[in-house]
Length: 129
Image (cartoon, rainbow, N blue to C red; front, side, top):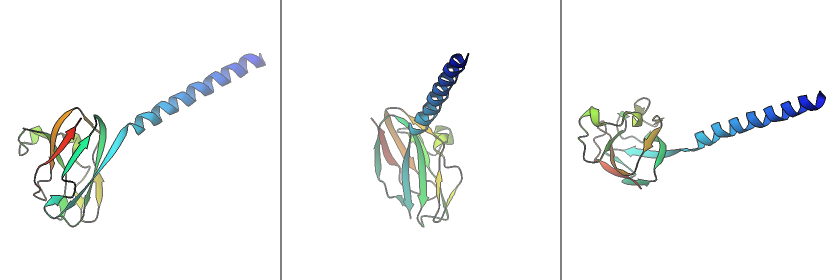
């Protein structure tokens, strides 16, 4: 009986351990892209990323009282909110000296544009290979 209980305890330990590793690996699959805004521009003029899932962190370095992030597929009208990839919006407007993050965004191969309408930045190119 002791042997049976020991085997069950070991089996349960392996199951819980592998489940915890799966959760950790999924969190590690999300990469962070840090973007910095100064007056009228992003300091990163273009980005090249691999396919995957990303969180965008946006920092406001005296760019405007509040800034944000808009991500669209290249060729789409950025002034139309229906074209925005809404998961890329930061959780709240980024105030002077602060940094805010987006939700997780899964990007496929292609070309995207990112910009901030509140800081009146140009549209910069993000390429996913």
